[in-house]
Image (cartoon, rainbow, N blue to C red; front, side):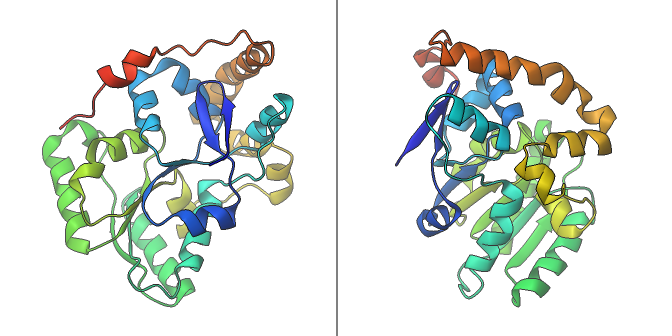
Length: 260
């Protein structure tokens, strides 16, 4: 599979159609600039990312970065585009059913109703909105696993935000034998429910989706975009000059194991 190296991550250079055709089983993550920066500092996030079967570009800025490096990516595949495309692709595949994990209480159920009405069948068969801090409560995690298993879903779409959603998938994918596909989809559940609006297409195409989100949620996102963002361009320059060094040694990948 053709891949493009950005900092310490290999990104699959796939179109939407190619991904949907190939995605019969596995874990899909959609890296953006924030993810790339977290991958410089968080070893557990790095190991979770290494576990993914597909890593596709979720940022127009990464498209730009790949061009700067002379290794262009062919298409931006954000989670919020991939998920509805995945549902449409499997409209008539009754063996494909989805469990939505994430968002505030009631939002995932609202998204379920809208998705099923649009697709014309019960493609989403279960939802759950976990409480804050659930990842540190083993009992709550076990409850989530039981809910997913009981639903009979073959796809788990996790919208908890990074790095929480990737860590959850990495930690528990081996426990969910009936689930064939794991999708980390960020705020997509809110978009599907209609409780959060996406940026206008023009802003997204110009790489300014971050600015739209910053204007809507300045308290939550200012540090990510205004403080951390410039660091990415510095690291990109280092890579362009051949001076970038992966902060994680090879042995770290074996040293950091998923929790039981």
